Every structure is written in C-alpha cells, then in structure tokens.
Image (cartoon, rainbow, N blue to C red; front, side, top):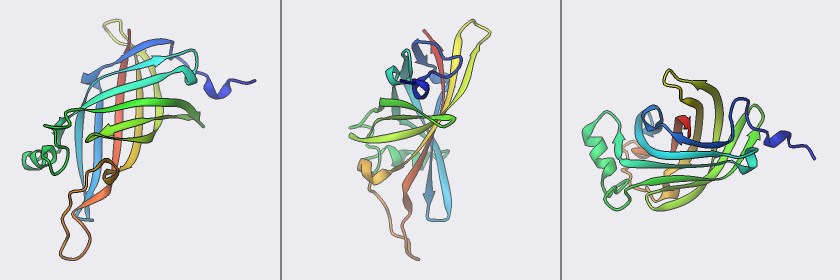
Length: 185
C-alpha cells in the first residue's frame, strides 16, 4: 500500500512545533454594505503542531483571543467585542483543533473543529507549506499559510442591519486567512 498521500513535506520533521505568536497572524475579510470590504486581525495566542511520522498522524491546535480584534477603527472594534458579535466577556477564546491532515495536490487540507462564539463547526483549511529555515538564534522554523471561508451565522453571529436600498450591512461570508510560523521544540 502506498503512503504517497501521507508523506510529510520536505524539511518538516517529526516532533512538537510551537506556534510563534509574534510571527503569526489570523486575518479576516467581510463584505460591508455590499460594496466594500472590512479587514481585521485576531491574535493567535498559542498553538502547537505535532508532526507525526506521516500526515495522518499529524495534529494542529490553536487558540485565538477575540478581545484582540483590530480593524483599524476603535468604535467598530468595540462593537465587534460586544454582545452583538463576539461577546468576548462570555466567549473569551476561540479554538481550532484538527481532525485530519491530508495532501491535496501540491498543497494540504487541515480539517478540524473551529469554535467561535461558543459554537463549534467543522471546517477545512486550504493550506500551503512554505518550508523551513533556521533563524539567526538557532531556532528551526516552519511556515504555513491557510485560508477558509465560513458563514458567520453558523457560529451564532447573526447581528445585522438592513440597508435602505436593500441587502444588509454585514455579509454572512467571512474569509479567514492565517500566516503561521512555528518553532521546533
């Protein structure tokens, strides 16, 4: 039986890799008023990638802090943190825990459970492995980029306002893009 679909990417070695929060970003984009996009970030506070002997035995877990949301507008950020949206007082962290890592052509899919606003939904992150490098401090690093489009309503984020010309203020679809750096433990 061939293991070609489960072989690790070149340069990625087995073991535990810690997410480097200072070099990792979770960004989102959502359509506003049907005519423009709002972009923002949410801090990734911790995470691990446990690389097994192959992709099938590899796992990913990440924690994000919704209270760190930043869109470049303090009023909007405050509204996003409120009970209308993220309700950070009640739901102080978001998590992603993988259930499967698999090859998909020249890239990878990391399937898992994403929890936002106290609601857990399965998602599949389209993922690119950007390689490994040793930094000037002797740390072995690996880099990844991943993205997924979610329905915010699926996570109980239903606040909206009707527009005079029809439609709604905030679209349902949200694109999440991750740029992740991990350090070999």
